[in-house]
Each structure stands twice: as structure tokens, then as C-alpha cells.
Length: 371
Image 1 (cartoon, helix red, strand yellow):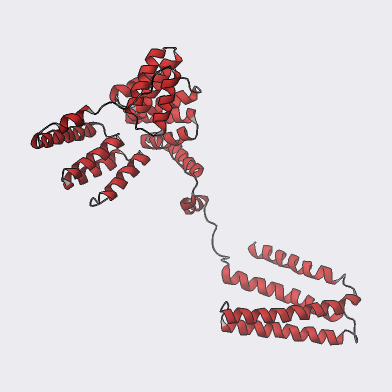
Image 2 (image 1 turned 120 degrees about the horizontal axis):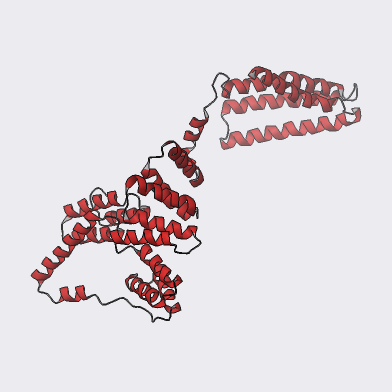
């Protein structure tokens, strides 16, 4: 079948060449022959330029010169014979011969050189695998969805695709993904918080009863969750409880780092509710440490670092905590503990891409072995 198709295509190409030859006028032959001669001369000059610049191999250049020269001589001979014969007959015969012999010969030579007539068709799945390095986000999500359709008990898969749905505004899909992750992997503060956010998005920004339940459960597991606390404040504002909303937004604003978009947004919320600007509270811990004797101060610092380590061992979904812990161990000169904390932080933040990048960057900055 392949050879039949190739033969038909070759015949069509030859016909395309021969068709206009049958409509040539004798009086056009002299002008066309002169044009051919000029073309071959220009081709010879171009071959010389390419050879001088090293763009083609000497052997290829010589072959091209011989071919172009041969065609130039043939063109000159046709030009001399125009006045003595039909000006179009020789050209038509030459073109017909080239078309009938040259086109099939060249086509067959090229195909036999670079083609693989016996090669079987690549399966669709293999094509998809080969294209994986250039896969777009939509293709990656489609592959995960296909995987989850075949493996509906893969809780990690649902947990991975859920944030992608959230960022894309696919709140219904995000809600199903996080609900499935909770069903299969159990409740965690992060999963419940993300589920609540998806439920808020699904309700066009309204903190519904279902979303409040999700946030309350999340805060029951980790009372420091920023998103859950923020939406709890939004819920109070939507209920018309301005005092409660102002209190909750104010607490978050006091903790938010100065100069961040979160701090600016929280300050706007506080101002809209009639509250005064909230500044960061005094760091009483630092003041207390500064007043201690050096030996007591070091013991207190070690105690706080050990307490932070113990808290992260219980709940490691805290990028800021891991950054402080690794940095604290390095300041204390305990490089081995810093290396161990870095490894544990990587494992705990495996699903938090942004947090993991920050932790790895800190490891490189502090030149921790293995980072």
C-alpha cells in the first residue's frame, strides 16, 4: 500500500511538471532559455561562495559545479538552436525527460536514504511518553486525571492535583480532590484548610457552613494556619459581626511580616472595619533574653530551639519553622543537627513546592553538606 501511494504521488508530481509544458508558446522559448542560462550562472557563483565559506564539502561542491555547468552548456546549446528549430521543442523534451526520470529517481533516492518503509507505526501511548519533557500543565493534569480514573484509591494523586485545580479556579474539582485525599489519607490541617478554600471558591467567596466546618477542624489541628484564620475573619465580617472580624483581622495583621502583600491586605481590612493601623507587637522574648547573663541566655535559646524542633516533629507543615530551626542550629554551631533538620524539613514539605524551594535555598546559602 505504501508503494502504491508513493507511485501515485510521484505521478501527480510529474503531471504537475508536464502540464504547463504542453501550453508553452514557441515565441517564449528564447527568453526562457536566456533565463535558464542566467540561473545556472548564478547557481555556479553561489556554489563558489559557499565553498569558499566552507558551507559545503569540497566533493559536494565539485559535484554541484559539474551539474550546474552541464545544465548551463545544455542551456547554451538550446539557445543556439532556437533560430533553427522549434524554440520550445528541445526545452519541452528536456523538461519531460527530467520530470519522467529525475522526479521519481530523486524521490526514491531520498526516501530510501531517510525513510523507513518497514518501520511499524508508533503506538499512541509511546508518542505521549516521548512528548513528556515538553508536556504542558494541561497535559500533565490530564495524565493525572487519567491515572486517578484507573486508580481511584491513590490519595497522594488527589492531594497533588487539588492545588492545581485551586489555582486554575476549578473549585468543584478541587473540592472533590481534597475530599478524596481526606477520605483516603485521613484528616490533616493542610488538607482541611485547602478543602475549606475550595468550598469558599465554589460559593463565589461566601464562607459557607461546610467551609466553616472545614476551617474549624483545620484550626483544631493547627491553630496557626493563616488561610483558615483569614477565612474565619471573613465569615465574621459576612455575618455582620464587625467587632469579631476586626479582632481576627487585627491578630493576623499583627503577625504578618511588614511590607508583604498579606500585611497590606490585612491592613486594608482593618481600616475598612474602622480599626487603627496594627503594628508588630514588642518582642518581649528578645528583650528578656538580652537581659540574661550569657550562660543563662544560651541555655534559654537552646531550650527554645529544642521546643521548636519538637513542635515540627509533631506537625511539619510549617516552612517558616523549618527555616528558623535549620538557621538556629547553624548559629549554635551544631551542623549535624542542622543537616538532620534540613533532611526532615524536605520530607515534611514534599508537597509544598514554594516552601521546599526556600528550605533548599537556605541549605545552599549555609553550605550545609548534601544541600
